[in-house]
Image 1 (cartoon, rainbow, N blue to C red):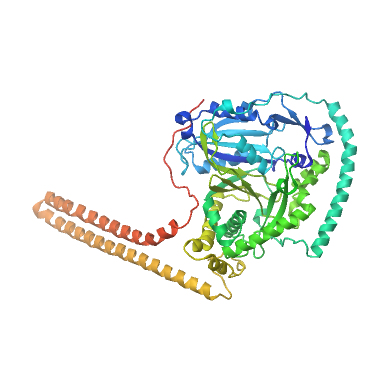
Image 2: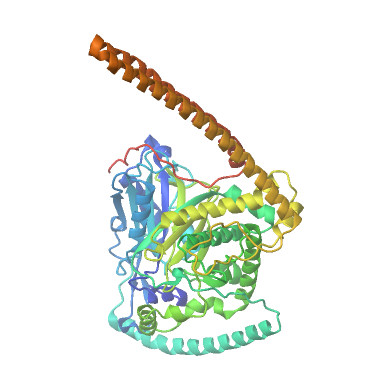
Length: 635
C-alpha cells in the first residue's frame, strides 16, 4: 500500500464528468509480421499478461480515505482480471479513418471506473478502408489515468508493453514478479492514518507557503532587474475558449521526421519549435475558415515540461510542470513566425524553471481531497475559467517515442497517436509524438468547439507544407543557409482582418514596405504563375477545339437524320434508320476521343511543373480511397 504524491493526487481531485483526467494512445498494427501472418485476440491478451507482470502499478486500484480527509492510496487489487481491462470491438462498415477517429473520441470521452485499476485497452478490428494502412491491420486504443502516468511515463509504459522483435524468445526474458496483494485497509485504519497525517500535512502546507512566498519574491526581484526573462503573452479570447462539454472529437496528421529536421536545420531551431509553428499556423487557418480569427494579438499555448530532466527523478508517477508561450499567429510569414516561436519557447523555459508557478498544478493536490474536489467542481460548474487573465488556446505536449519499430503479439506498430486531457476553458489538446522516423500531430477537442475536425486536419497539412516550402525547400535546392537566414529576417506585417469580414480573401497578401528580395520573389512567383496560366490556356484551347469538332460532327449527324426523314416517304423507313444509325456512332465516338486527348494533353502539361515541386520535399500523408481489407480473425 502506497499513498499518492501531491501531484498524482491533484489529477484525482480534478476528475470531473466533463473533464476526465486520463490520457490515451491509439496504435495501428500490421499483423503480416506476426507468426502465421495474423493475430488473434487471445494473442494480444497473452502479450499484455506477460508484460503486466513487470508493471505492478497497473494491477493496483485506488482506495480513498473516508470523507476525503487525506490523499488516497494505491492498493494491489486482489481481484485483478486482465480480460476486464482488454476489450474487443470492431468498426462498422465501411471501416474508414473517420470512423476510427469517431470511435477513439467516443472511448476517450468515457471516464474510467475509479474502483478498478485505472486503465483500459480496446483492440479494434474492421480497419477495412483506411488508406496507407497495411491490409488486415488492427488498432489498439489504451487509456490510463493521469495519476498513474504523465506523458513521458506513458511513453515508457507503451514501450514496456511491446517487444523489440516480432518473434521474441520469452524464455530469455525476466520472469514476472510474484503477484502479491495488499490487505485492503479498513475504514478505521484509513481514518487513523489521516489524523496522523493531518498534522504533518498542515506543517508541510505552511512551510510550503513560506517557501513559495520567498521564491515568488526572488522571482519578482529577478524580473524587475531583468535578470529573468518573462514571456510576452496577451492572448485574445476566441471560440477555442468556450466551456468544455462531455463529448470529444479526434483527428491526426502524419508527417516525415526528415521534413521536420530539414526545417529545423535550415532555420536553426528545434523540432519542437517546428511542431509549435505548424500547430499555430493550423489554428490560425482554422479560425479563418470559421470567420473567428482574432482581430489582433496572438494565440498562446500551455507547454508541459518534463521535470525529471530539470530537478531529478522522484518517486511520484507525475513529474511534470507547465509554462506558457505565444504561438505568434499574428505573424503571416511562416519562417519569421518560426523564429519568433523559438524565442518564445526559450524565454518560457528560462522563466518557468526560475518561477514557482511552474508547479501551480500541485495546488490541487496540496489540500485535502474534500476541499480540492469542491473547489474544482465549483470552478467547472460556474465556468470560472472565462475570467482568468491568460487565455490559453491549447495545450501542446511533445513526447519522444522510440526511433525503432515495436511489436505487439508479433504485429508491427505502424503508427501511434496520443490523446491528452481537456480542462475547463481549454477545449483543445495537441500531442506531438515521434516514432520510427515519423511524427504524428494529433488533436483532441471538445465537439462543440471543433465540430469539423477533418477541416482542422487539412489545416495541419497545409500549415506544414507552407512552412516547408518557405524554410526548408530553398536550402535543399542549393541556396546556402546564409541566404535562407537573410530571407527569413524579412519581417511580414501582422495579420489583421477587416472589420466585419468573415475571413481574409488571400492569406498571402500583405501591406507595407517590402525589400528587393521580396520583390524578386514575387516577380519569380508571378512568372511561374504566368507559365502555369499559359499551360492551362493551351489545354483549354485544345479542349475548345475538340468541343468544336464534336459540335460540327453532331450538326452533320443531325443533317443526315433530317435528310433521312425526307426520303422515308418515298423510299421507306428502313433505309433512313440504316443511314442514321451508320452516321451517329462515328460522330459521337470521334467527339469523345478528341475531348479526351485534349484534356489529357492539357493535364499533362499543367502537372509537369508541379511534379518537380512535390518531389523535392517530404510530404505529409494524405488519405486517398482504399480497397476493402480482410477482418482480424476472431479468437
